[in-house]
Image (cartoon, rainbow, N blue to C red; front, side):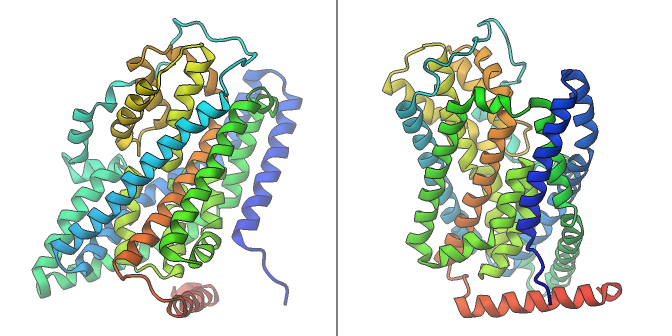
Length: 435
């Protein structure tokens, strides 16, 4: 019997095919407008895939989170898990921001750039007013649950689901029927996720092809120092996250990293950490994290624990300051870090959120916003690394919180659970009509 290729291998193959396809379009259609038009058609598949994922996120977060909280039993358990998760997120955010700051100062990617700088009066046309602390606090609480679901506001869905889950838990026997129904909803959403994920390789191929068709590979050479420095910083951050995971999980961290290969590649290729969310939940199930923890910590992480995006904020701001030869004292850089710590906490759900946060920071420190135009061309390539890092950071954070709470299965129990999941999947494939 021939061994089937794992999903992660299909995604890697799709990425390579997408790059070749995109480069062929770029070479054969030198007119930027024509290439962009063709790229628009190619990206239909990746757009549809991401829309399908977004369609799932709201109901999936709501159903898994409500059931998870209801199974925790009381509000004190919810508060305890919330506190532990938030402690990890704040620490990881600070480490990410500081690492971006250190690497940008060491590598000096903006000095002697050798590229024409955009005119200081130019604007990147990004709204920056959304990221005040007052607006963020107001934004956390939903005006309407339906509106939060419609706009895929993960943080607002989390807030409502926490209230709903705690209320259901307090109802005791009366709430069991509703908990069971919502549990069935979560299983149905994961089943739909399985169907949608079959499109992942096609979506990856389309996303890569569209990006390369418009920008070509030459743009990577022009920004080699900046991009190389950023990806080197990301590798260091991955090592730091893996080491932190090793401190709390021991050698099992290796197993976790193997399990999240597919969601990692998926978020990298589509430049969307949301695309990896359902797959990470399943990977954490296989690792032995109980669903009541993963369904609670993961959605929170998507709002508070964007490690890759955080590091990019400090790295990119210093890159732009260096490009315009604007010196920033250590005190100013620390102030910037603390401001970014606050303003970046509402990034989830905002398109190109990192750029919006960077634009707001540039304004506050009198650095030309026009500098954003320098990095806009390669932002998609950078976003791939940011999104993949966010997926890794949230996976490790969830596993560690589960260990702290005593809700992580032993290795033998996790293996038995993974075997039962495989058996269920095999039965579904053998009898799809009865699934």
